[in-house]
Image (cartoon, rainbow, N blue to C red; front, side, top):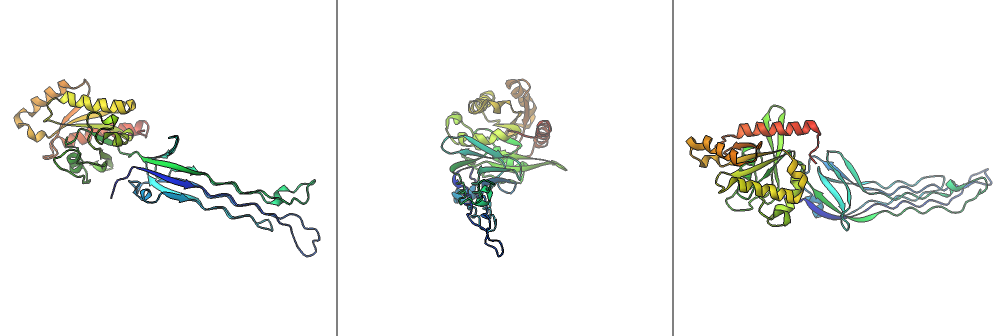
Length: 340
């Protein structure tokens, strides 16, 4: 399935039905009063979060969404039928903005959440509504209110507990494939990962979290270089950031600082999220020197940063890493229940 996280659509809510001008005509009632009913409300356009969707692909090929109009009122005080609301189902974490101004309309986070993108027009009042003691025979009714028409941009910010941050070919895709059932593309050339790939990591019974492989970040990603700018937004909703740096890096601290610098340049708040560092490709180090190598690597990193030496190929260090990630995720869920 193709991953689509950004789409612009045109929507229009339904217009309200017109009120009716009518008068009673009944046997033995020589002077029947006004009996025009109200028009029905136009249908609204809403978006609803669904836990079964992971992409905006369906909306990419269906750009126009118009809700039906309300029906006009009728005689005998019959109100017109309301227009049916049009519900657009989107993945959890979808944000809606006005295309022209960028103004935020709202977002849907949990499954079942609904957001009104365009309100349906109100139905007009029939002439029965305007009857007064001083106005016994009103011969007018209200027209229905027009619907709203607008261009809306939908943007998906993936909801994942753990987001992987690293440069191209750092071993992120291999790690996701090893600890979950996800099958991201793996190859030995840069930018193999072109879209975020989520996977579920099972830690123990009733203990699991979602991990997402984000396309590689290079220097200048926050200014649009590489693929980083487009996908950095997915990191905003992660509870924990897992930095992945291969042991083959010439300067571990420089590689770490580069990743942190690009995140800070994109959005300062991201750098305040809990983070863990995984030094990947452990199997490339001589077995008898791994412990000493890890101690030296920790000394080069900022104080307090949790560092794990792992190998996705052999599985070394992965159980401890999963437990560490689970502890951070559980703490984030307990504290506020939201990663935004």
